Image 1 (cartoon, rainbow, N blue to C red):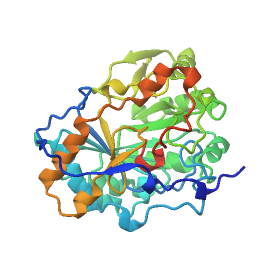
Image 2: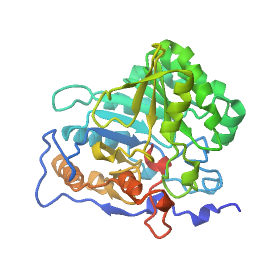
Image 3: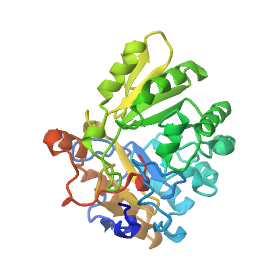
Length: 379
């Protein structure tokens, strides 16, 4: 039966707390840790809640239909507000920013935001690492302008090379060839190395694992890193079931049977992907195993929604609303102190707790608070 979008709570009404400056100021020293000792180093910023794809694991068409209520433009943070917050996060130690959505290239004049963010510096005076995740549909058209504005690299979501499978998964009849053309254009402008993310859903696209591995081994001279992501229980609309998860260990086994692999060390603390190199020097792949091998223990990422709510976990059920402080005249010091206070109170480790419950208790709990949708705060 088709779900009615009227039965889905508009995400703007999901639980959140309005933020105020704490009674005891939290200075911005560039060194901020949460209750589990995890630093704040990465900020993912959603610039739009809209997307031109309707992937079943993220924005299924029977929910996100023509009647779905997106945020009005007046609710979105302006580029100046986003940049101000990013600067304050940088003062607490953030050195990497990833722009997400929805589909971030749908945000008009996104190059202007990138140019503003490119001017920011860490407390040590270094530029921030600026990246963007996209479905690739507009990448060919925009790659040169993104690079010129200061973007350093992109991550492209691509779940199959088989056109029929891909069109079925994106559910808007968009062809694979156009995404591949976007990847080529991004590489030509210097937006690399590029990461390509494939969400693997058992019974839907698992047969595409080896074709994807073969293709990206043979193209682009190692400048594209393919990563396989376990199908996750994000939000409330994708009908997630544990039996549709293909564990990353099985993905690695399938690839290694044809192309021997060698494990690689993480490049940075808190890296989400486990890295593997082809033994013959043909590049590398990665797996992101948030269901079967939770990595909450060193998660250093915060997420900012398109209208200014701060989320401390991809699986969060509530956020912290920073927009009133931005628009009601709060000082930089007060906003930075509020951000620090929120992070210091963080103890989120959803995936680790799910793993402790075991597979028999892995289904979403209808009585639990509704989790934020991935399309709203980015993957």
